[in-house]
Image (cartoon, rainbow, N blue to C red):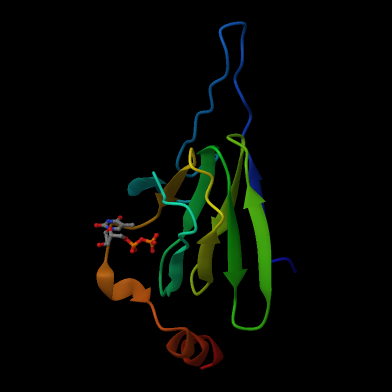
Length: 133
Ligand code: TYD
């Protein structure tokens, strides 16, 4: 099974342009408690390098692009996010890295929980221990 779970969002376009609406428990398969977005990422900077114990997220590059690496402790897969009508679902205990941000990239993330620092696993060796337990 692929680690990359792609979600496709229907653009509600008319002659004025496009609109995408994301709704919790409908287009996004969980209750949305938090939204954050990453922008202005400097050239050559990579982000992420962590997993969560208990968090579901959907990531969408609404402008520009970046490359995600997802890792479940056994396999690593990559996907380039470059569409405002396509997102990826990232579930619990997935190590994620984000690379190759274009200067205009706005990466929006919808999350199932409020920010909780204690939910983070930031050490890759600890992550491997937790997934293999
Ligand atoms: P960080 O987790 O380092 O970003 P990433 O892993 O995506 O590269 O987050 C940067 C800072 O922002 C860090 O001090 C924690 C804070 N933060 C919040 O306060 N709330 C949030 O929802 C997120 C995602 C981060």
